[in-house]
Amino acid sequence: MIDLLDALAADHAAVRAMIAEVFANPGRRRALYPQISRALRYHSDAEEKTLYQALGAYPQETADIDRSYDEHGALDNILRELDATAYGDPNFMDRFAQMNTMLEQHLVPEESRVFAAAGQLLDASTRRRLGAQYERMMHREGATVSDQHRYSNPCRTCQPQPVGLVANVKQALKNPTESGRPRWHSLVGIWPFLSKAK
Ligand SMILES: [Fe+2]
Ligand SMILES: [Fe+2]
Image 1 (cartoon, rainbow, N blue to C red):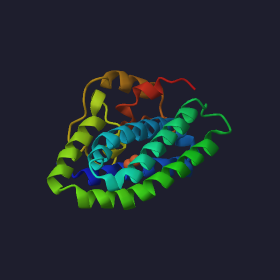
Image 2: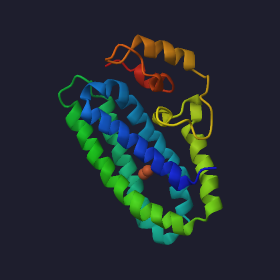
Image 3: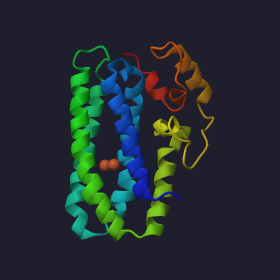
Image 4: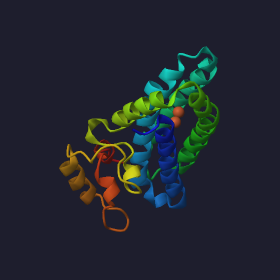
């Protein structure tokens, strides 16, 4: 079982990699933004139900917990704005950059202060139990949020689920990337976002 803190850090890195790819090649935003948005939302939710819930037993962590919940809420709000912004809108990339700034202002202290505290306060077996719980939550609905893991690494805890796969493949084939060929990492778990017309 993976340590919760390792799983969270891996997802941070995976999202950062996708965001960097969008900045490097804004033409990729149509393919990558749905996965970024989905990954961040699922991550915040699963992180609250594992890491922050466990830290709630320690009063000295209250301020950091409250701040993180507020920041998750603010991130969700700007993701909603981005969801409602057409990819062709000239404001899309500015708003995306704003989202990234907010995200980094959350991730940096979370990775330093909060993860350090969790490493001290939660023992290894608790972190592994929570890591397994986090992974299960991230793989709900048969579609891992962290599909971005899968294009660099095999999934850590489960095999790709068949649920919805055929529909996702058909949709992905209808929406090839700019290279004219579908990217296989985009074939699982992005149905709700691909189906959003922009
Ligand atoms: Fe996080
Ligand atoms: Fe967080």
